[in-house]
Each structure stands twice: as C-alpha cells, then as structure tokens.
Length: 116
Length: 115
Image (tube, rainbow over the protein chains, first blue to last red):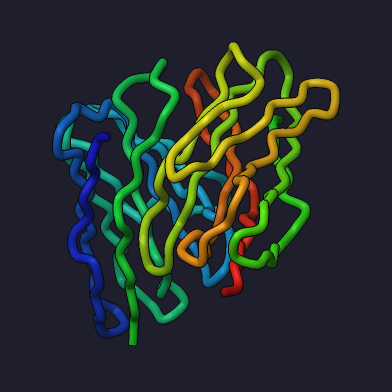
C-alpha cells in the first residue's frame, strides 16, 4: 500500500518557539493532504485540508495564523506550529489522498509534540 | 452533515472469541464507509472500505465488516480475536463539503483482547 512518512516523530520544544512537521507521500502523488490533532484516547480532530498549490482550508476553531500549512508539492505538506505553548502539546497526524475521487486516505505515523 | 457513531468506548473480548465493534452512520445518498486501526503511538492503518457491491466486506488481518442499509450500520467483525488485535478502531464516512470530499471519523473504540 501507499506510504506516508512524517518527520520528526517526536519533538520537544520550549514555549514560544516554532516547530515544523513534514508530511511526505513516498510512492504516490498526493493532491490532498489532511492534518489532524489527536488528544489522548480521543478521536481525530481534523485541523485543515490542503490541496497542492492552493491555500489550506481550516476547520472551524483552528487558528490559521498559529497552524501554518503549506502544500508546495505533490509529495510534501508541512505544518508549522508558531509560538508554541504547552496547550499545543499533542499528537499530530497527517494523511494523504491520491486524488479527489480516491476513497482511501493513507496516514503518516504521527508526530508527538511536547511544549515545555 | 454526515456522521458516524461508535457507541462503545471500549470492547473487551477473550482471545479466540468472536469480536464485534459497532458503527452506525447517518448520510444523505450512498455512503462511503471505512474502518481504520491505530496501534499505540502510531498513525492509522486502513482496514477495509465499503463503496458498493457485496454487503460483507473483507479486509486486512482477518477483519470483515457488514454493511446493513436498513439498520444504517457498518459493524466490524472478526471470527477469532487475537491479543495483537488490541488497538483503537475508528469508523469513518466520506462526506462532500465545500466542493471537496472530507473524511469524518467516529470517536474511536478501544478493543482489548484478553489472553
């Protein structure tokens, strides 16, 4: 099956710094990528949908200036958590889809962010 | 808006026994339904999907799911559970929103298989 990678897998940072998380589709071109946030033992919260070459569509309640998403190529999307605070600590997961009509999403392994 | 519901936070089953993880859906039109599994500190892995065709869908790791239109359900099943099946299971539906297909996930069900 299709493979999606995320980097880093784990990051610890100080409050006020910015953190960039990369999501790559390794063996297919991802026209659409999704970014999720997951709290412990909770469901996935969709943060935003990004289509290659266009601005991301953010879900209600997600601050677009805080969670910057870039989808510059068909194999790479990045999520930057700007001026991170302890409440931003979470598990961030990306997923990718090969096309609008493709039904199946492929998920990355997730990035654990801890803000001290 | 389309949605899925997973009524159980947790399901406990003994190894070797059959397991069922429940999911019901609410959609307009034909549903596109999915099951994913998440192991600790990992991303989600695709198990199976229903788009059209046979109501019984077979997926990875011996799992299957039965689409029941009259009951609007898509329960995940396995005839004989393994301890290694212990994980978090998510049901999902695809909905069209703002010109794009957006996945909507249930809240997840924790499956615990006891030796």
